[in-house]
Amino acid sequence: MALNVEGFTIEKGIEVTPNTAGGAKGRWARICEAMEAGDSVLVASASERSSLVIRINAQPGHKAVTRKEGNKIRVWKCVGENKTQKFIQD
Image (tube, rainbow, N blue to C red; front, side, top):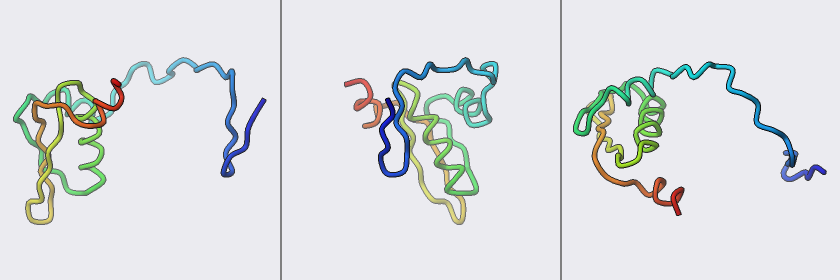
């Protein structure tokens, strides 16, 4: 049985299909994994900042901190727990 809400169909009983990407990681995942706590990256746009922040915050025990530097944005990988991680774990 499907349920229509706000123009979207909510479906039950649909199996998750296998990942066809073969576990390939995107550039932000690779950058994030190469970073250690205290490392930073200077990015050119808010979109790039968001992509890296999401990756850092997804790692348990780490949180992203950002600051504007001229027309660019610096993103640090710091030790700590972010609110999203805490919410997901509860």
